[in-house]
Amino acid sequence: MLECEKCEACIARKNDYQALREKVAKKCAGLNYAPILPEHINCDGCRMDGVKTYYCSDLCEIHKCAKGRGFEICPKVAMIWRNNAQAKTTLLG
Image (cartoon, rainbow, N blue to C red):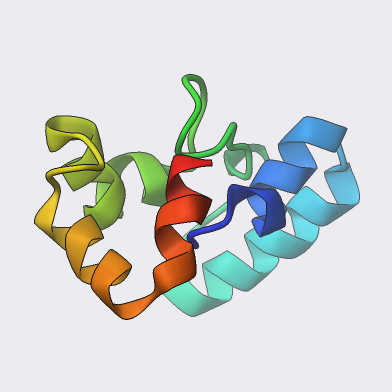
């Protein structure tokens, strides 16, 4: 997800929508064959400090690369920018 503002986990946290957390948890649990609970569906967004979903904080290769190297020099982000002109604006917000 390159746009935090459209991410349902981010929307659920910002607006404290429990029903949306439950919907997203059920969908993610089914897709990942993992016990994902509504309380796991909280994220402040990749560009912000604060809580992240498990996927974003621990599994997302783009987030890990950008966090470790910075958006400007992360090769994974550079590849996205080359293929999607809008992505740079979106990621740097």
